[in-house]
Image (cartoon, rainbow, N blue to C red; front, side, top):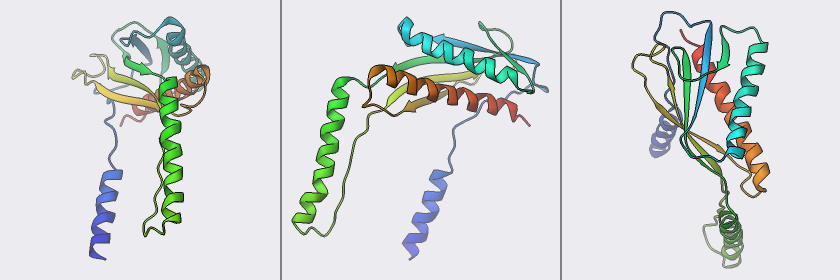
Length: 188
């Protein structure tokens, strides 16, 4: 019982960890904030259009609501949120095959263990994910420390075709944008 409580406390502490947030150190939030998107991952133009269109759609829908500030697409300037995409990968056919094989083995394992009357039964699977590594920061006017924070944007549907993977990753990126702007809106 004593070990159970130690495990419970340890799990609570580990699960309560959160990612570092952007913090505007100015006294006031400006009336307009730009979003500066940078492609340092050598993303091809078709894929890059997904990121730029998701950013533009987010800005347009955000500006329709009555918010503390307005957003705009910017080059790096004095009042901007900088989003530097440094890595972007989708699930390849090889990863899909690997995922199917590992999952099949993971599903067969408990069947074999049950048939052999094993005292412990377990299963496992592998679901490949799309990954985009982003460095987020604020311009020096908003945060003189210009802290850069890495964020991994992931989405599933690794077993779907390429276009569906891109669409799913676009939704994950849009959610990232929403969370990013909420960090700034909730400035104390």
